[in-house]
Image (cartoon, rainbow over all chains, first blue to last red; front, side, top):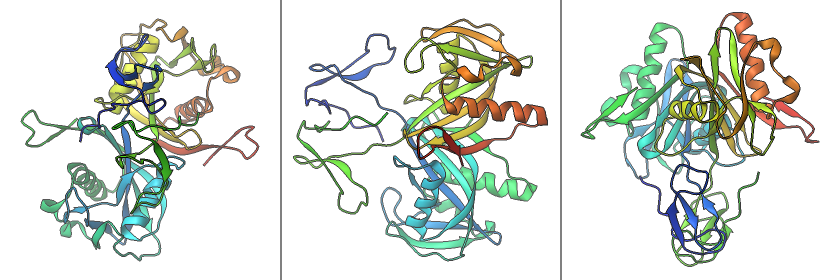
Length: 191
Length: 191
């Protein structure tokens, strides 16, 4: 998912060229008319592992990409909110569920798509849920019920693998890692 | 630091208007000519607490804002890097120092400026450093030497307070919080 090229200046509508600004060391989209520099930076995707009596809440996607596959409630963080607020908002939007007592669980860098995932654990309270507009179905699952072969994204599989390993070990850590595609793009390396 | 208003479309140069796109629930900058939606999202600032024999490395800023005040090496995460790589890069740029074995230390939301700080601890190795282009001075400090009244940003003070409290307690946690200005803007609330 490469960022769309910037062709025109957001400030003056002038033509934009990719060049290294003075005092910088990376090429940026710089306006040739007014000089405005258009920086592009990674985006935060944040979400939650909603917990209830040993089960976790998963959503089946009603949107592309990965229509029909399972995921944890998560989405792009917006301006004017905290990361935890964004994770709770996404859970409410996608699973019509309220989560409380959010605890940071994982920070995953996905440099090939310029995203950083920030995942929380949260107590489902009340234990009620329903598919939001972007979900076909929402379901509480035990570890044995997780559809490992039908998860939407590698980062979600990694989150759930670590979560259940931690739970078996009786202690939840806070995880930090990068998920990088293998050279042949057939899989991912966690580092 | 409000985001600059988007007045022209980055794709076609057409006029942009703030409105709620169909299926969305927040106003976005939408092109009136080609319909392109210009999303704006929080940015990640990442940095490091470089550690060496009980001391930490601070930089005195050679740039605005907060010229002349002290900070930890930190800056905007770029595309095509992991968060930890960005934290190490900023440390190299601002303090000409190499850090190893980075451990996630804190995630702080600053919703009033649409930033999320991701801070690491890292071992200074080798224990060498020098001011980078954006620093006037770089210094290893014991807790008693920290210039609490001359720190550049509240989030840096919060990071260092928690760091030294953890060290006294003999255990480093991973911290998550939001720093929000008080109603009268005279200070910050941590929540």
